[in-house]
Length: 214
Ligand code: BG6
Ligand code: MG
Image 1 (cartoon, helix red, strand yellow):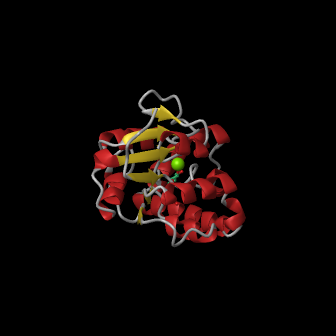
Image 2 (cartoon, rainbow, N blue to C red):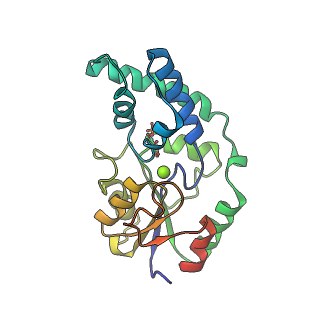
Image 3 (cartoon, rainbow, N blue to C red):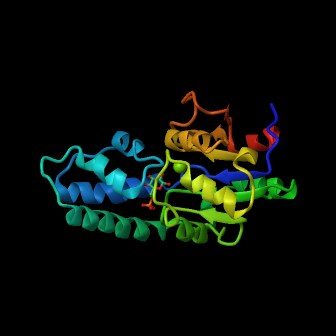
């Protein structure tokens, strides 16, 4: 199967690099402090979900009610822990497979962009040495509605002037696949709960499988 596209929009966490373990550790520190049960299975539900929506999922297990101000403070505390952990990342966290595939897609003339819910996108890209690589970045700082709303992908496409119908999105989260489809884009699922969710146009066997279908 071949997809005729002009731009490829990449989700960041779980697609370009793997930050799940740092998200997990940072949420776990907060959950432990608050005495709330939290495990890796619950962490999987946070994939592609915004920071505040993630906090609400964690607080489902809390016996206490918290005010909006307290919730803001919890989210800030988690983010501080998370950013400290992200300092462990370096260009070595960008795999050869991802780097070589991106280079080849660029050589083939595609616009390459990021569409991530994360407000830490630019920091993460700088940690792995990709600050100046992408043609455009749309992230959690650009949007008012998180995936499965298509906003972040539509902004990413608009930044490179490409029609949504000419964009393919690479996602590891079902919420991201839903967002891509809602935006009228082709959805390519890679790992996570995106693969086999039933809404995607294609399941990628690996990141480099992109070179077989584009
Ligand atoms: C997504 C992650 O990319 O970004 C989610 O998959 C995360 O797990 C979301 O909650 C928001 O991230 P941040 O960095 O803004 O807290
Ligand atoms: Mg993701």
